[in-house]
Length: 253
Ligand SMILES: Cc1cc2nc3c(=O)[nH]c(=O)nc-3n(C[C@H](O)[C@H](O)[C@H](O)COP(=O)(O)OP(=O)(O)OC[C@H]3O[C@@H](n4cnc5c(N)ncnc54)[C@H](O)[C@@H]3O)c2cc1C
Ligand SMILES: *[C@@H]1O[C@H](CO)[C@@H](O)[C@H](O)[C@H]1NC(C)=O
Ligand SMILES: *[C@@H]1O[C@H](CO)[C@@H](O)[C@H](O)[C@H]1NC(C)=O
Ligand SMILES: *[C@@H]1O[C@H](CO)[C@@H](O)[C@H](O)[C@H]1NC(C)=O
Image (cartoon, rainbow, N blue to C red; front, side, top):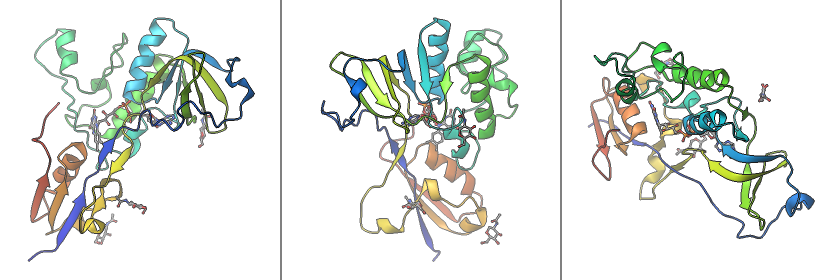
């Protein structure tokens, strides 16, 4: 009987709006009540695909906005994930049609813009591209379209003040106020279900990417989402058996 390797594929949860404040403000900031330091009409937190796309529309509409990104680049999720680097989103360059709308609907990677050089098909010809291509694409998207992104800015303690404005701080405790707050921080925290033997599982974020580690093994994967499929596809050729367990049938985008 082969060794059983338990692989826990993390599910991620949204950690939006974890309200630690309930109106009681711990920051001892004299500006908090009336002044509006670093005011922007629109604040967007996160320069992933979501934050960049909304920034594009705000930029085009001439709005007063700023995107705050904790990393030093856009699309930072794709620096590490998917860990096996092969995108699950297909790069459908040839559709048999010339209709731009039709083609865009079949393009899983491009963001919307008026710049034809910003079609993902210009960045990779592979059907399942390397994630580095998406990282390059997203950073070009931010730069070429002059999107206002302030990098190295980790925002915390977002709250709504009595005067209706939102306020938040970066890691150096510089305060920012905004009329509208758009949170595009994506998915961030693994969910680790508790059960007997859960100490034996390995999280997706920590998995070995060395195929030799999976040779001849029987692998049990908890989950059937992006992370689970990323791993299953990668190890399938060397394992004895791969079992996947999901709480619902696989749904494709
Ligand atoms: C394992 C896995 C594989 C995937 N593979 C693919 C794929 O192949 N193709 C595909 O299209 N999609 C894939 N996805 C889905 C894709 O990752 C998401 O749909 C996409 O990243 C969501 O974009 P987003 O902008 O909402 O969030 P994110 O891309 O997560 O961006 C959020 C941004 O917010 C920043 N941020 C977070 N907190 C703060 C803060 N407090 N202050 C400032 N900035 C902050 C982060 O640094 C990050 O840059 C995959 C997902 C997973 C889990
Ligand atoms: C962000 O920080 C990194 C180091 O962590 C630095 O190399 C980079 O120049 C900084 N970028 C900006 C825009 O401040
Ligand atoms: C991943 O590794 C880190 C550090 O090695 C550890 O703290 C964490 O518990 C691991 N996560 C999982 C889900 O195994
Ligand atoms: C992968 O693992 C095998 C066996 O443990 C080891 O011999 C090999 O050096 C590893 N390869 C890499 C790239 O780490």
